[in-house]
Amino acid sequence: MLSSVSVVASLIILGLSGATKKGAEKANIPGAAQCGTWIKNPEGGIFTSPNYPNKYPPDKECIYIIEAAPRQCIDLFFAEQYSIEPSWECKFDHIEVRDGPFGFSPIIGRYCGQQSPPFIKSSGRYLWIKFFADGELEAIGFSATYNFIPDPDFKDLGALKPLPFCEFEMGGPEGIVESQQITKEGKALETEAVDCKWYIRAPPRSKIYLRFLDYEVQNSNECKRNFVAVYDGSSSVEDLKAKFCSTVANDVMLLTGLGVIRMWADEGSRNSHFQILFTSFQEPPCEADTFFCHSNMCINNTLVCNGVQNCVYPWDENHCKEKRKANLLDSLTNTSGTIIGVTSGIVIILLVVSVIVQIKQPRKKFIQRNEDCDQTVFQEVFEPPHYELCTLRGTGASADLMDIADDFENYHKLRRSSSKCIHEHHCGSQMSSTKGSRSNLSTRDAAILTEIQPQPVRPLIPPSNRRSILVMKHSYSQDAADGCDLDEIDEVPTTSHRLSKHDKAVQRLLENSAFVLDDFEQASMKYENVDREYTPA
Image (cartoon, rainbow, N blue to C red; front, side, top):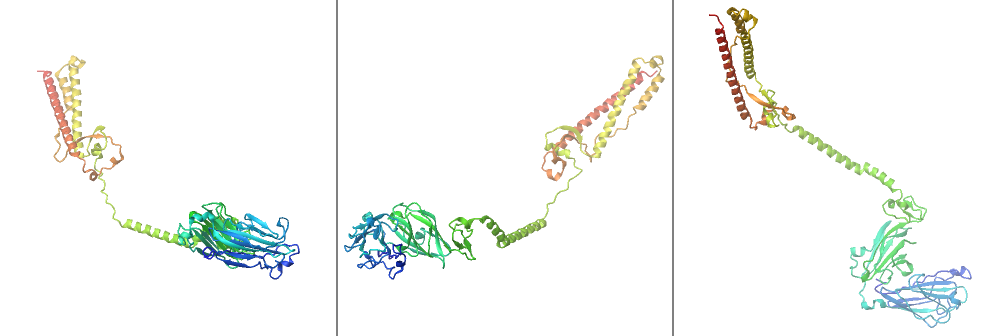
């Protein structure tokens, strides 16, 4: 690279016509743009005032900026053949030298008169020199020689390695310049010192606006070790627009369509980083496909509401919520609407297929509930016992039990009538005392016998084809007991046991019935004995 490898110092000669005592007319004289000679070589160079060693022209202002390679300094010598119009504090014709690349860099000295300035040494890579001549009392001017020497701050490093070639080309309506591109694109290793340049080219009739999104230098305020510089128009030092090596970096508005960003970082400053947004713009009046930024900028319409501030003030990102809503509706009517429609159709088809499969699927078969089954038989399995007497449904068992009930009723009637008869006979009723004849007793006894004439007794043992079963019934409150599906409770092991209990109960009932018949027969015999005792001989 010319500026770093060949270490060529750049002498910038700017012919500027300044305000003079004699008027601005002389600023346009032939040769006014000439500011002397300039000889450059890798180790240094020579520059002179206009027309040296003859008298310099009036109304002249020339600026010379000398730039050395990184880690080098500048030694400046003035020749003895020197003459500039003398004045108090050199207010008129003079030479001004500053330690740095700008007109606001620290001043080293202002010189005029007949005695040449002393030896000057820069503290860094730059020297800024200005020659000014008014419209009166011209002189022969000056001749200066400069040399590049190693910077004493880096003398311990020994022989320096050549810097890697590191340049980038960018363009378009906007873009991002960032230091990470150095390692991403393999321009240099993370341990190497770098001197990289980014060339930004705007569209025709456009200028460039640079806005820092991120900026940090590892060694702050040490411009010898790291800095970020911005050039307007070329990479020459005369087009140096701004240089940042402290903690703050300001936005830069370039006046041309070519911007150059330069980053220098030595081996110990590679953690320095930056990120710059560049935006191409035109000056008003704005064209139809541009957006007016209210700051003398017309940017491309594609940059409006893109989530990035491209204007100096955020006019391009205002009122973007309403625009995003409108864009959302537009997208729904186009691409997104198509996707939603296709997805909905697929879902409907799947639903229809699932319904058809459900209909075609074989249904479960349910066994019909047996209504004749008495649910009380199986209630004991599900709840604690609250017993009461009940019988299984069946007409045969009910008829047998009804016969037994009739026999009990007749027996009680017989007991009541016999006890009444004996009581009246022994306790001396008027009829027995007055009459006491056998005919009366026979008549009364006949009435009683007629009343208690025994009914034909049916066999108490139930037929073989019917079984009268006495079961213990408990109350059942669960809703599940409403159904008595025998198929659902085939595994309940209580039926046989319960039936055996019922057989025993029936047997006990039959035994009790036998006792009842015995009592009935005994009562009949007693009645016959009484009848015999009171029958007249």
